[in-house]
Length: 117
Length: 111
View 1 (cartoon, rainbow over the protein chains, first blue to last red):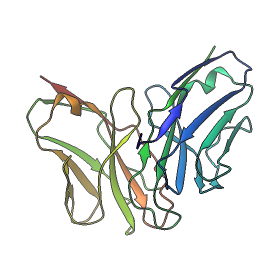
View 2 (view 1 turned 60 degrees about the vertical axis):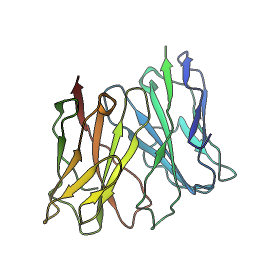
View 3 (view 1 turned 90 degrees about the vertical axis):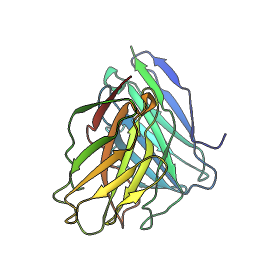
């Protein structure tokens, strides 16, 4: 498809398990973002990649959260030792623009809903 | 990032125009005004953006006040599919494109 694809759409994890969420951005998009959206709230920024470089990870809530984009396309968000407060929808977005020249739109995926029991 | 203020919720009837307001009194000269919307169980979707002049596209119109301290998203004829949360966001022209979402406005459209 032509849009941003995320998998899995739904993930249930037991507290303490590790999870990995995948994002396939639109082909050729330089910028990739991860957001976390708690129930009833707006999305909150987690981290940003320009190609394979992680230029901003200021939104990652703890060192249990790790993101990578090794070849500048697909990205994975990994959460280690999941806690109940990690339950949220994790959104990935991509855009064509790059640092300093990005006033255009972000294209979002449908998100991965994580439930930690 | 400069802050925006939006009403928590608004209601409209189908096929009527909807004016969604946004205040951004601390906007800087290089901030673009972006609107996104989020339909239930979906990721946010770009609607429109502008800098100083009013903008129109197939989805909506954006009216920007002359002093740029407020803006209004206009849906010319609301449909049931327009029921969503609408976010007004300021994005720096020199930034890498990060969006800072607020609470947004929940738009309910009545048949």
